[in-house]
Image 1 (tube, one colour):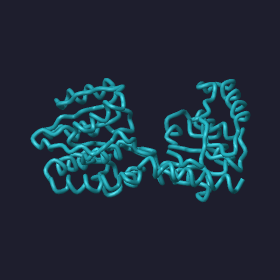
Image 2 (cartoon, one colour; image 1 turned 90 degrees about the vertical axis):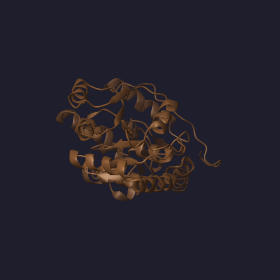
Image 3 (cartoon, rainbow, N blue to C red; image 1 turned 180 degrees about the horizontal axis):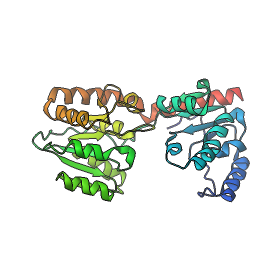
Image 4 (spheres, helix red, strand yellow; image 1 turned 180 degrees about the vertical axis):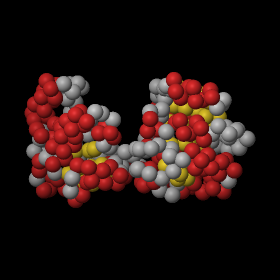
Length: 304
């Protein structure tokens, strides 16, 4: 997708582990591989210390890991994965304004060195019209981790005639909640891209009522497919959704319930969100995103 004047090589580091020896070996490997422009894209932020500041870019997706670990581990990860790398590279790219704000406020990074370049949507997600099954709509929900807010969604649809299609492994608490409210549901996981695309196509509504996201790709994938989306009014989700989704407070079961009922009952709202979503998704075309990265690469090469 990159323009012809931008050539690149994809470098894989030798170790996936995060023990001290593996980190050191990866740092050594990164030093040997440094090039005219260096772009760190994986969860290996720490190798920035081995690369020249004037021509290195670091992509950071989110900072959620800092809220999931013990205080001691948090300090270590913050230092090696965020603070040191962020201050030893020329530019940082992030996938949302929400992540940029976190870096500025939590890590103390200058806003001027952060560029927002969102994730691209895969070309496999295309508009496929579907008759809306109002009597018993299928609501697609992606993800079962705590931040995906499935428990509140289950409670919200307890009194709604619908089928809940859940992608991701359920834990015992989620199983119990589904049984408690006698929810009509089905569940699957470990899907291929082709299978996930079909899940969107078969859905009547896509629910993405997360508590926190660095981006929120399912919003864009649903919009590209032409499905009405209900998502959260916090974190990165409003900026990703644009005007193409119904925004609710994800901490309120009642708001989630009312939002889903609105989508089921209001055909005009559904159609409006679908059209606005199809327009919004153009921002995430792979060629558009590649052009933004190419511009940054040229800028760094010229400044080096």
